[in-house]
Length: 455
Image (cartoon, rainbow, N blue to C red; front, side, top):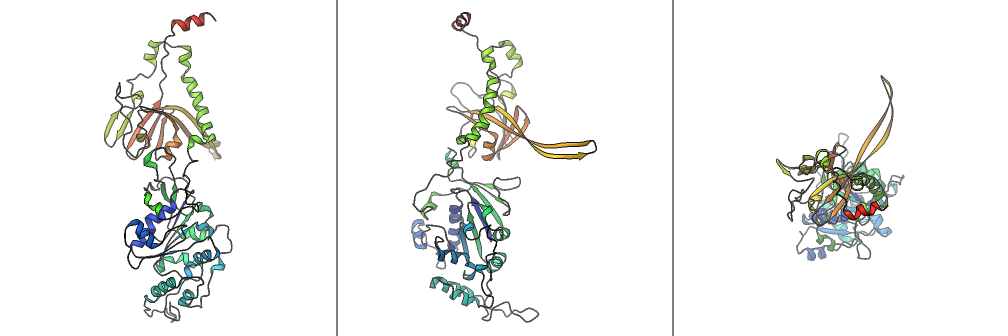
């Protein structure tokens, strides 16, 4: 594991992930675990809650960093932490902040002091923790190794030399078999000393705002370069959605009040005014054009020959899963009360909605100017164009509207073929979506004709 960073907005399950998938397994292996996770229960209480017994060597050292003593203890962990221990630093940006330009010299120690003396003299450290650190230290037998100048790599007592500063500790933590996880809501606030030596950074984002049970307590996580912010997954990064069990929340209090606010409550794209403006202004324009035949009439016979009919491949579309091809996208596959959803495999977002029809109802393009490039034919401007599509989906009981960005957030990729034809892909299928065919206008009844005649 070595050193890692878990980051994400508050409520993105980064701390619960560290507790359930790392702290508990470390205790089950009988390791010494140190953490400042707020409200974490004692080892004995956790055993009662889980109904299991940890090995005799397992030890949980909880340190609150809401006070100066706890901050000093956690920030100087390399002064006293037992060899082979596992440490989880929650809110690590409060200990090693990116705006601190002092290189944390306040945490340094004197190289001439023996390791054992550093451990025993560390202020406020419980005696049993000092004892465990001492036992781990003396268990490593001095093999008498010296370099070619006759200098030993041990201290005067023959014990392992601990790091003298945080930079040395982070750079060489593997040599002491230390594993470190730092959790933070904003990775940019964590000092580059820690980010630079981390093996990986894992971005967390909650999808509790999606009104589908499968997404509850299943954050989207992806590993990325710790020196980058990693807000969204990019090509080549592995995306996972681990299920966070409810049991983990009985092991610690994630808030001071003991109550939890619902995560992701403000992330619903349809509750954001700016997003609504971007979606529904183009959508209203497109729907206006599509509804023109309803007001001005059209030739039913012409409609049969010029418009996409219900049997057209563009109207029906194709859904390919593995090596099977199934008809039934643009219009319902069957009639009557029988419904055949085009997406039917969980954890597919659209499968959960039981979508039967999926049409493109809006399309806008956003261009970004990149600059002027000198070529053989003169100067040329370079720009990138990004396509945004608005989709209308319908199921047996409801109708939904969402855009291509929403689908990307749910794990889909969107491939534009034409302005009226896109491919929607996920790990199990490719779905073809087309523009909604214009509906032929119905003949006005006699009542409407009499009204118009009187105008």
